[in-house]
Image 1: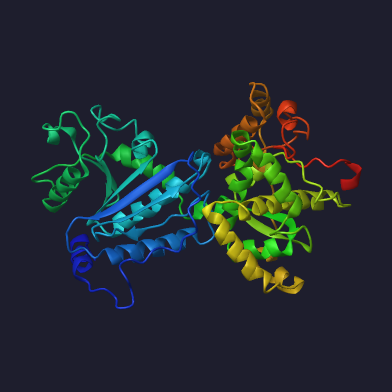
Image 2: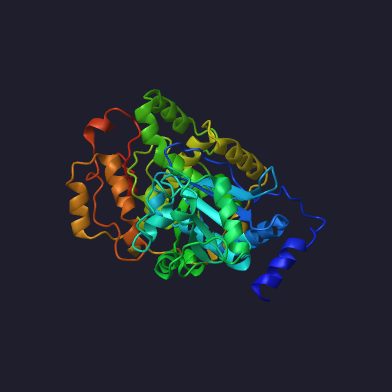
Length: 452
């Protein structure tokens, strides 16, 4: 079917009776980390009678196909119809370490595909830095397009990056271009096929963007990390029922130190929470596989942490010890999350209460799909000696060192680097450790022999 025939069908196709125009994607609570990077996007129709519900449904189909087992770094991709009915829009928070995640480019890939399927829609994406697509295609953009002139000029349409030329709006002095004028120009240019208004595009510019989304969605599967974890049965059930919740847990664990630095009273508060373990008691331990994204796994794996007395040393093999250490971190992470004031707290407690009413037995647990395959190895986490020396020798504190390790995930994703050979005491900031009971550290029990 050619584009024009398809566009006509799109505009005049009646709504399916059981669908509602205000339907939203299945979403989890927005985590609301104010320091993170925000990605915003909107889909506008070229023609006023375009059926946006069909576009919404198709986008959901692509999302489901691409991200069926993908773990988002923070917020998942969502999309809904605007109250005016004139556009589809959404936003997602990607966290402070968004640069090591593929999330932003997953969204670009999905929406790029949408414009190829529906040439009569146009899409705008912006993050906290503005027109981020221009950064990736900087070698090919025209000289007149600068940050101060780019607002509302960069769009995706029909599988191409389209830019509204500055010369078309000489009356605007200075920019930025308003969204209403931008949409008017885009619609005129697309409807008239460039005869009465023009758009700028470039093969090199588009190739740069396509290079970032090349290999999707297969590439997304390759970024997952399946890890062996020993944890309380109740927590295992919660994560199994809603795998995406792992991101909220890891982020909660990762943010606890910064929160304690801002408010010192959080140190004692967290100590009490992890001493009581009201929501996820350290009992009825089971061993299973848990899926992370590679950035999330590195984030929690690289964190040094001194467990509270609630988690006594146990006589375990080396492999079991690693699973136990990771499970302690996750148990503490979800305890802090469940007892927090974040939007995730209510959701986690709901999941916890529901699973507490229907405990699964060992046979059922072992039959879960994730437990029927071998966990992944960690060879992708091997940093070079040069990287380790550089990170350790640049005067960073402990938290900054961990973040720098995570930032090297651009290499991890290519399988070129990782993390090995750093002892328990090499990431140790003695001054900061003295100010809080639970440190940013790998697990350090009182006796190494007790854990052998």
